[in-house]
Length: 440
Ligand code: ADP
Ligand code: ASP
Ligand code: MG
Image 1 (cartoon, rainbow, N blue to C red):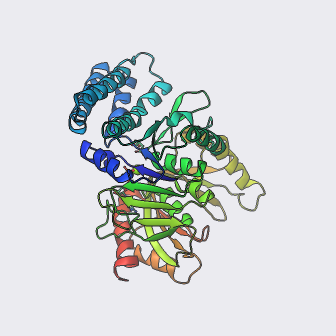
Image 2 (image 1 turned 120 degrees about the vertical axis):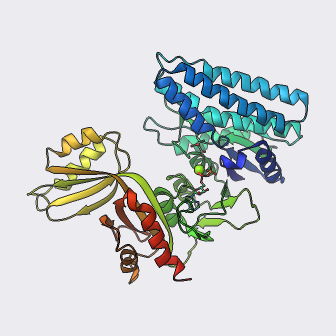
């Protein structure tokens, strides 16, 4: 059994849905994990914001706009009147659900129920299309087997037991369809795996059922050596190790959800990135194979906050670092990077939702400075920290950019640099020129 995950653009129109259905209908056993059609989750976020702002007119208008879009999709997707009316009936019910919320007591669970509708709609339309075209598939409800704990962390064992149990009900079925992104929390409510989470769903389900392979189908021909949204002339990387891919995903390569490599790595299941628009392109193969030494790629992670804690009696005093770490642990905020000196510790976080409480407690230990709008630029490869010359090459490339922090030697796979976000594109381009273009 393989997992095939298709992102928003891959199912972004009636035409794309038809192409995906043809692509997966090859007789091999697979679970197809679908995202919402492109733009839908963003529209749902907008609707949620209107509900929170108690602007029900704007919410109604945004819902109507989204409904119009889907009415057009249905017209293009189905041939028979009976399927057109089945699809419209389904949509009517989903859009009535979106409209039924009230501005006065709108809650976080309402928010999550709304956010889930994109994946619920895309998978149901896909399943109906298969039915109309006599393609034998079974639609599985991801809410029944993708479970998270009270911190939103996936429960791998439960996912494994439940997904295997669901599949056992259909011993003869070859093609399964399910939702990415959505899951159920311990209160039994709808939850999600954060934006871009369908990749994570695919990897979690793949690990859960011990899949042969997890394929992530998207709108580009694999993981590129740099961010193609900011740098010209990037190219796909044929092979990456799990560790390299995990670092790239964690440090901002948008093509993969930050945590999506870990479940597959844990079960040693290869992850293959493929282009839906060009299925014959090789893409990127991620596995535990030895994939050679050297610098492979650069990624950047925005919205980083850098915090410096300075104290006269710091490093020589036992327990100073522990006290700092305990504050972050207490507020369930993970630290990305850390650098120390005789008198100060600098560290970065990407989730600043508890920042005020953290700063209040840190101020009891020392004087604290905070820099917002920082970016971590991460250069990823194999053994780059140990090999001679790589660090110098990286720092020389960006000698023109002021650097806030450097992390070197923490991993064999990355050298990370914290800079002001306003210098990000410049740094990505300079690194690209010096590390890749000049070499080729
Ligand atoms: P999907 O909707 O299929 O999940 P995403 O938009 O989440 O697709 O991810 C694909 C996009 O990621 C690409 O279109 C590209 O712009 C962006 N991207 C950022 N960094 C990289 C990279 N290193 N390699 C490939 N794509 C990248
Ligand atoms: N639809 C969700 C999002 O836009 C999940 C995903 O596409 O992976 O974030
Ligand atoms: Mg994505």
